[in-house]
Length: 217
Ligand SMILES: *Cc1c(COP(=O)(O)O)cnc(C)c1O
Image 1 (tube, rainbow, N blue to C red):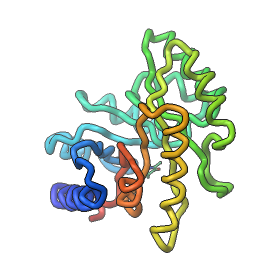
Image 2 (cartoon, rainbow, N blue to C red):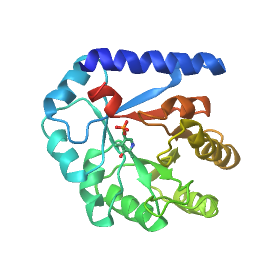
Image 3 (cartoon, rainbow, N blue to C red):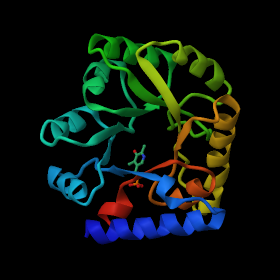
Image 4 (cartoon, protein in one colour):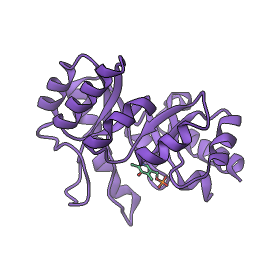
């Protein structure tokens, strides 16, 4: 059941926060509802969880049109030809992985008179399959993105590679925090999923993106 599963997630959040002495209330949970029906989203909303994460623009738009009052997060790779629809739906785009994409978001946000909040996705691991800006290019890209008037950079996102030993994910989260501290200490960090969010919280995550732990228990 969603309610029990999310209580267990919160218990795990409290346990990791108590390790570092941080306040569990500062962690936001984005409930990742990709592949889930609208009823699951209504159930989450009824329990007070209103931050919804989707990884496909079409699926998000379909759901967005059926339920109001929620905060929508784009967490998947975003193609430039989907940006026009994306700016209509999403409150926060976590997956901005190039200056070209940032410029297109700025352009489409201007058209609908919106300041679009974004995170820059950082590619912290060498895996070929991962998207994201290389740590070497991050400072320059964030400086350029900050000049765009209809864009607001709120922080960084990263996805750690699958690891047999969860401790192996720590270095990717720690690197993301280090980059954030260097470039803009006021930025938020979106990092940690069902298997690795405890480590991410210990390394300073503000936003965790949770799917399976909510729906599969
Ligand atoms: C699916 C997904 C998640 C949630 O993953 P779970 O392992 O189901 O918690 C988080 N972030 C991104 C980018 C995803 O695609």
